[in-house]
Length: 174
Image (tube, rainbow, N blue to C red; front, side, top):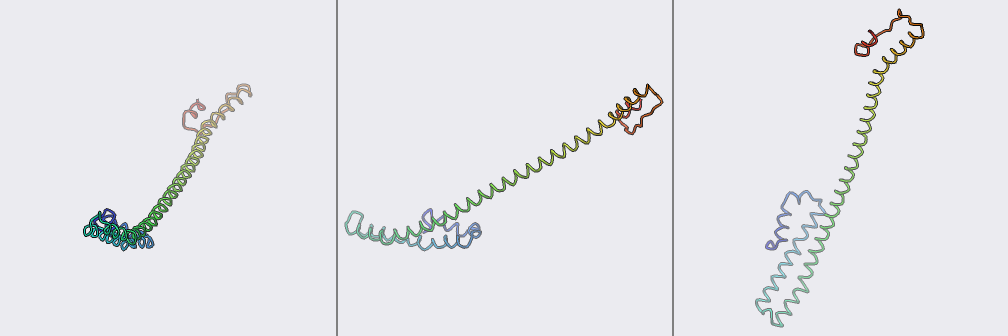
């Protein structure tokens, strides 16, 4: 049975670490392939022996080979195909679950990006308002002082309180 490509794959796979990681029901599906696979080879071997004994052209050889094929080979092949179909269904379901999980993870990443972007914009606006307020407040106070100075008839004895130690504070001081 290990001479065919399927057999080579099968026996390598059931002895691998990947096989051990499969769910038990899937392991059972694959392990159940061993017997029909071996019987499939046995029936093929029997057909080969009939052909060697009777020849492929004799009616008796053809009848016996056809009988073995119809009564044994087809049944064993159908069993292997059925189990392979079950394994394919498992693989398809696993793939679908992986695709759904990937889509869910992608949606979560999009949500995180949107939240982080929103928080960044709010923080940026807050910083901009803070800086703007700190820049415009002293200028507004200085303008109000000058306006009050003009309304008071040019009383130059009035003083402005300067608390900034920057260019705006220098402007108000001098």
